[in-house]
Length: 136
Image 1: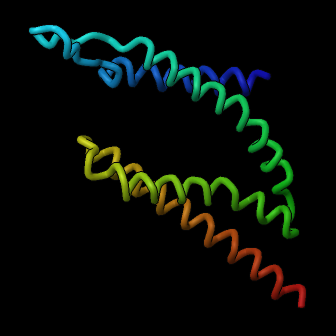
Image 2 (image 1 turned 30 degrees about the vertical axis):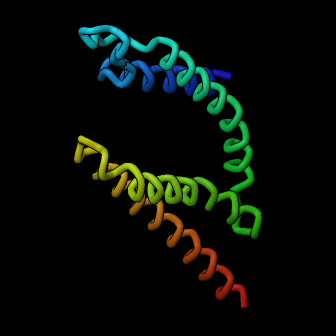
Image 3 (image 1 turned 90 degrees about the horizontal axis):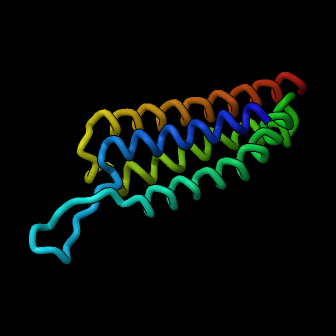
């Protein structure tokens, strides 16, 4: 339960950092002065969505992590779950969002995560192959 609350706190903290950076700042296009205001509805909706996703997905990933012990086929698939998800997400982000990202640090971070995820997949498959050859 504490881990789940920690995860919810992390999601809220991430959303608050977005809020502080002006991610939820919107322009009022109906007024003559184009005043900006905080889009609280967008902030609450987005934060609530990601809190629900975290609460639903965390136990599933916890079970996958628990079943990742050993080197049988199911365990190897469980071990590969997170790195493949990270690799897929970073590849998508780099293809779709990198050119619109004003911060080169974010793009660099995505590159590093993609590279690390690929390395982890290669290492897990390499260990699995070595163990299979060793048994023969």
